[in-house]
Amino acid sequence: MPKRSREEYERGLPGYHDPMAGVGGAPYARSALTLRLWLAGFGLVFCTGAAVGLFLLVPGLVWFAWVLVVLAVIAAVDFAWVAHRKRRGEPG
Image (tube, rainbow, N blue to C red):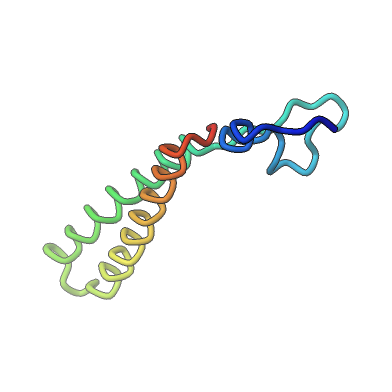
């Protein structure tokens, strides 16, 4: 097995997260960081907007608005982490 350079590890190894990488001629799996970034952004915007709407318009569902606030915080943390990984240079 050839010795890998530090740049290869920083860029991401092909098939690293894919246990079936190369089996039967299948291509290596690629990370879906961009998709995950978009989904986290959508979740953040949607949960924040829905929570504000529930707080203002439907006082009987305040408990559900708080659930949406928690989900919005989780989406914000996920968005920040994925953005950090992409900025670091991981493929996807």
